[in-house]
Length: 288
Ligand code: 6CS
Image (cartoon, rainbow, N blue to C red; front, side):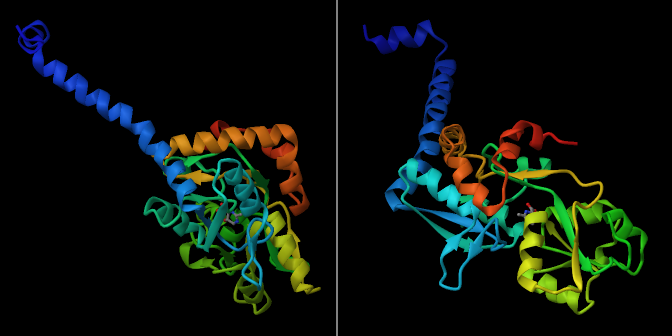
């Protein structure tokens, strides 16, 4: 008698095979996801998507990458045994497709947690929060306080990054597509405003403040916050299949929030650690 014969007759053979196959797939899932962290450790770096929008992310004239997002990601990854990050500048709208296409290993660029994005990636817990702002000409000649003000004024044009939350908010408020102008970067947005090619340039408050300080142009001012817009928070974003990597990242992030290290990294850039710790991924990904 061989175990095979009796075993085959005692248990429905097909169910047994299916159960074994399912077990093998399930058992390999965490291993595969765990592989990503091991792959990053082995390669010695993680490929990070950034936008070059200070103080969230910035690339110096010497090519050095800094900003709250990269500094935080570098610190967390180092504690996970990934010694460095290699950053690539990407438009916000191209970050998630690039992550999914394995051009990046994670995004930490102030990519706000929005329900539609939360369906495409897995986010860490919140790290960087801010309200929305608009740079306008001094005195705000068109009286723009909100995206619906822009929608209601057929002459008003608003600039925003492609694929950004500001672009989406303006379109959702009813601004026609041809009056929402995609702007490649901050300095270009300020120049377009100065040249009257747009009437408002919309980014988060800290970004607009940074740009206006650098522009040092008395003919420009900020409308902050943009009326009717939510406080938004970003987190590090990972591929949906990399939940184990995200969980490992989250564990270290929570320890750093607890120890004060998180505060020491982000607050010099103007971000509030308290604000980030006052909300959760769950709340932000399910916001109406
Ligand atoms: O997540 C976003 O879409 C926005 N985040 C930042 C940091 N800047 C502009 C962008 O629209």
